[in-house]
Amino acid sequence: MPRNFARHEQFLRIFALLEILSDARQPIDDQALIATLRERLGLTRLSVRTLHRDCEFLVACGYPIDQVPQPDGRRQGWVLSKDRVSSRKLPLETLTLLELVAFEVGRDLLKTFEGTVLWTGIESLRHKLERDVSPALLSRLEKAKQIFRVRSPGDSIYASRPRLISTLSGAITDRNEIEIEEKTDQGSTVVRRLLPHCFVIDPPAVKLVAFPAEAGDALTPDLINIDRIGKVTTLDAKFTPRPIDPTKLG
Image (cartoon, helix red, strand yellow):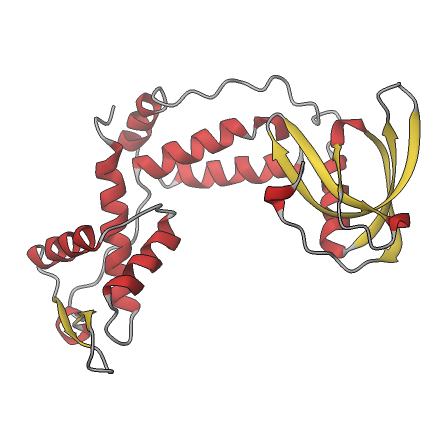
């Protein structure tokens, strides 16, 4: 079991830094490198001091990395000498224990989709990941998974209706209006015509974000728990999607 996942994050950061510099056509300054690394790895913060320490580590490993003046002459930028590294082929980026654990946690969080087309994609990706991982790393993964436990959301409520999410996602992608039968709190069923925009996942619930077709220019969409949706009919009518701020959805 790993004692510190920060070491794994450090490896990913240094490898990403090496790839970014290898692909760069001109020197990259500190702030541009930090912004690229944060976006690529989802880091919330990365200091200039840490960046310099990573670069110094790569230099110590024999990679020809240096700071040189940028074209504007006002700032320094990091560069990897292509001539000196041409004989040194960069190793292929491998899967790490941290990445595999993160995937397993994400998979467990999405078990509510078991039996749907989305779960098919998740399991296919899991198979590809495990196929390319060594037995030794898989053994370590089984132990490391004990660090993060996800409470089971229970049995998938969508497994008995595998076409539901597929039909809704197809309508969202193609911008087709839909007609649904929705169960109310009173147990009755109402027929609604909607403009489906996206899903919001709030485990274990999955909600459809949609505007009522008859509401004209309504600014606030409805959130419909999809386990209340009965029959879904995709209509021929198209619609123009509206901007949605997920953080403001109720």
